[in-house]
Image (cartoon, rainbow, N blue to C red):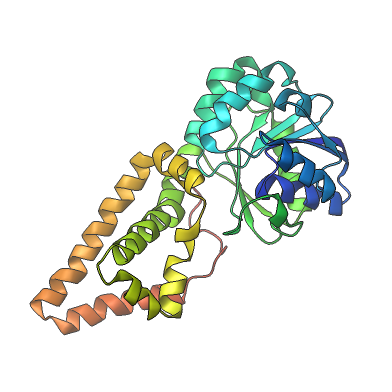
Length: 293
């Protein structure tokens, strides 16, 4: 059991982690900090945290586990604010959707204290953000990717694995580079496509009329276009190289479909559609990877 969890960023992810640890009996006390005092006050009223910290540094003081739940663009500034209390044996984790930029920030700021940091990315969330939507079950049955560095203390990697597992998550380990390449393909590009597609539809002269006719397919395809703009601005910027590689692959695939439509080659068009349909039908979320990255 942990004596105190320090949460920096009392939103959906940080709040849900706090509630999950409380429900599992893994922590005695939770102290939280957010830039907005109203957020931490609400978190306390909701029972998500027990104590409001007046700064990120004070959220770290006395904590033996710390979760940074801030936008990836704010990670380096957060590290600078807490660096002097990053002590050996204290587990520090983040929840960022990109890892190379987070790791680079940690290297620049934490330096010899880098051993305490275990980069993490829980594959969980909701369309509705904020502390009011925090859920103790958010991470149950979900994957959490850890991207430890050569300098990361092995006992803290194990401790991170144990705590995520204890709240119901499946823990995987990857390098930061492989993580960002993989999630450019299966998360970041889909968000970019959803943003672009919805913008293209609604931006047409008759776009609003088209929306009035949209059904479940359009709803499901564009669901993630309602995601947090600030968060996804940061993700698309931070991982742009890998996302642009995937975008090029998508363009090539789309071009192939369009060429078959233009040529009237219906047999080849059906073959391509069938391959995609059968592949999607056989896919299961969270299924084991065929190869270890």
